[in-house]
Length: 233
Image (tube, rainbow, N blue to C red):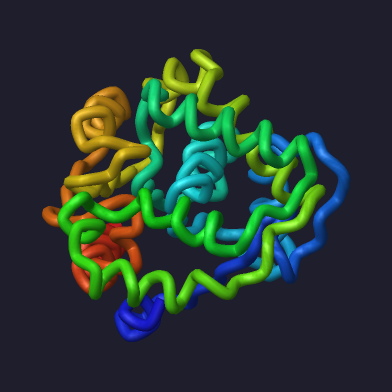
């Protein structure tokens, strides 16, 4: 956010339904419903003119849907670690997460912390200092309670396995940017590049050395790509 603000943009962020401090209504959730939530945020802010949209991971899926369903609200969009057809890994891990959420049992906090570490590059996982630093941040976070956890994982799995969504890339009619991370296991660069090619006029950037959490570990480079792209629109 700070680099975007410094570049002269007004920036708004929000937490999706199911993520505190936003409310957690009963499941099911869907990416389409959460896209409607995004539109409601824009309406609440009075941002009636087309805006720049940036989304990471599930936020990128919401941004994709916003671009296709409500192009009149979007001036340009950036999808980070999100634009890809589903991989076998993504479907398998999301299925496991959904099934654990259905059990409605809170596992030890260290489990959730170590599960998050899969988003780091292998080289970082081999570095005890890096792992210890991340665990010091994540290790004592409270469990993510239901119904938010179940609702979001069900929405994620439904999105990942829906073949219709990738077919809609050709419908994109606003300027878009796909930002991929070299070691991203959820949205591998070759799949992200494929998505960018399928979107008319879409630009592609790749952040070397980064995993899925590149928006945190390589924030400066990601911000530079966003500000340069949005400033041209």
